[in-house]
Amino acid sequence: MTIQLTIIRIDEYGQWTTTLGTDRESQLQMLQAKIYYDIQRLFSKKDCIVFSNRFDEFFAVTNCLSVEDHLSIDLELANLYPNLSMSITIGNDETPYRSNLDAYESRKRGYLLVDGRKIFGRKMFNASDTKSENNHVKIMHIDIEGSSNISNQLSPYELTSFVLRIYSRLSDEFLKIESLTFFLGGDNFMVVSNKAVSSEIYRIINDVGIELGTKLKCGIGTGRTGKAAAEASTRALDTIRLMRKRGKVQPIYEIQCL
Image (cartoon, rainbow, N blue to C red; front, side, top):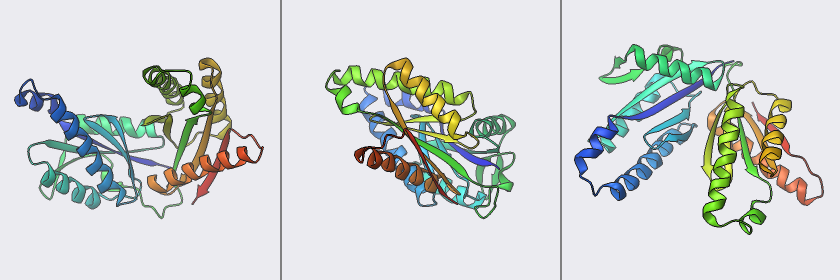
């Protein structure tokens, strides 16, 4: 059972930004938003999902993607942003955290030149086959229960600070089981996992909720691709909301699309 992560990074971004002068921040914020849009759009077309790790680095869940698919995306990004140097690193391993490490180690070892493009990835030529029985992705979609009530008690900035504290705690706890957490905006988070079981997931969201004085709910989705798993997790979260309206309280729910 493996998961494939692709890290897309803007190389030497800091050095490039200094060439724009001191009145550059508004330009950079617009540029970063556009880059994220284009990366998400290109990978989404290939049944993947992308998360922003930092504004100059993105994580894509790419179980369905071959090296050739990566090359086509890399080339299109190069055409869209000819003044920026972007790199793609592919990692494969049993958990998202280990795939992240594999990508990190691959970058340190250096790139391979494929059809004139630089691609990093020690195991990239064994890119996951979506038809493999051992290939699947588990993604959790977590949000805060009753966030509208919280927003009536806190100012917009205080609410953001509270949400980021939850994000930090979820990230810490899920990292202990080699899962990666990403903030989606609003009061929503997604966690890329592989081996986490329902009891572990429930313990984490329950403990974090108690610690910070709130309640969390979690839809769990499993699929052969990142996009399929994310969609299943959102459907699972919607199911929790529907059950709650009918009087049944259930903090986690899982849907498998295998």
